[in-house]
Every structure is written in C-alpha cells, then in structure tokens.
Image (cartoon, rainbow, N blue to C red; front, side, top):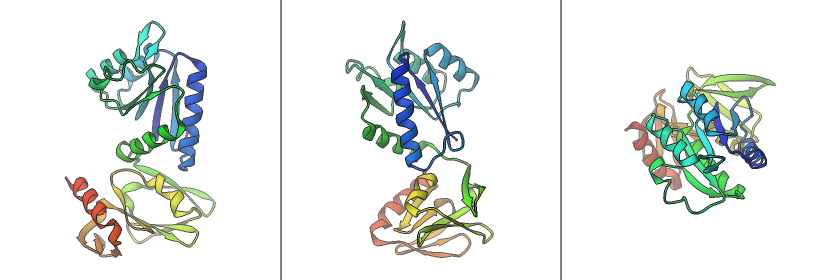
Length: 239
C-alpha cells in the first residue's frame, strides 16, 4: 500500500491537499485503504512520534515548512539523520526556503496554492521510482484476486480488457482498459515493450532487439520506438 503523510498546521490547506491526492491517485485506479492511505498531522511532533515508532511508515510526505512554533526543514533534517528515506514534497507559501532545503533531498518544492497538474506529475514520478507493491489486487469475474507482483510475467491489451499472464501458465482476464491498468503496475520492474504489452523485467531472459524472451521461453515483440527505453530500464534493473 502506498502510504502518504501530510503535515500542515492549517486544517483547510491539509484538507485541500488530501482531496487533491485522492483525485490524483484514484485517477490512476488506486483505491483508498486498499492501494493507498493518507494520514494527516497538524504538528511535527505528532508526525515524528509516528515515524520514530515506524521509520518506514510512509512512502511520501507532503510537508509544510512554516508550522506553528516549528520548522518543517528541521523536521526533515531530523528524519534524514535518523535514516528515513521517504520522499518529501515541501508545500509552502514562501519561496525563501527553496535553497535551504537541498540537504534534505526533497522530491520537489511546491508553492501554495498547489497546482494539481504539477503535483500529479511529481506523484507519478514517485510512484514509478519508489512504490513497489508486493501484492496487487485485480477484479476478476466480479471478485478481487490478490496477486504477487513477482508472479506476473507480462500484461497485454485484449480488446477493451486486459490479460495478466502469470507464472505457471494462468491468465487473468480483467475488465479494465490497458491504459487504466498501467498505473497499477508502476515501478522499476515493469516496462512497456510494445504499445499493448507491459513486461516484468524480472522475467526477461534475453533481449534480441525487436524481440525478447522470457524465462519461461515465451517470445514477445519489442516495438522499434520502445527498444532503447526497454534496454535502458532492463540494464538499470539488473544492476
């Protein structure tokens, strides 16, 4: 589950950011309390108490800089010093801190009021790079089926549905457009080899330019426009 924290001492601002996040994630077919969760904190103390108990509690933190009697930059520095590697997006009404935040390795620095499209782009990058769910739920014949991401060989567009090919030969046909399925198979281990095929890099046995061979012997096409990116991602994955 993609875990997000919002730390802002202005209830209205926190609520706005929470609503934006929900719209962004649900537009990518992620379901609240199933695929993602959002937790709001009104002070750095309450957030810090949670993260000291569970250092890896959150994938992403939306952090206001000027909190009442507190400073978001100091909180972020403390989290980094204590080993937290969650992505941090600073959200503030002030430009003055943009150069002061570099040491905390933020994902981005956004000014209030937040531009939803800009936030969506940053969220997409974080989902792709930092969110790697072990279990993914698919709606199959009206029932939710939980699948281990490692068991997925590849996904393919089939008319107005999608097919998920699993190790062992099982195929799941889900009533979801391929374009809607793609955000749910985010992360560094999945890459499109063709307009209609998304392959799990973990199961590639060999790349041969216009084709690839999976570890079960299945051969899949690689479109010319995607050869370079597939090779780049595959090399990065095996390193």
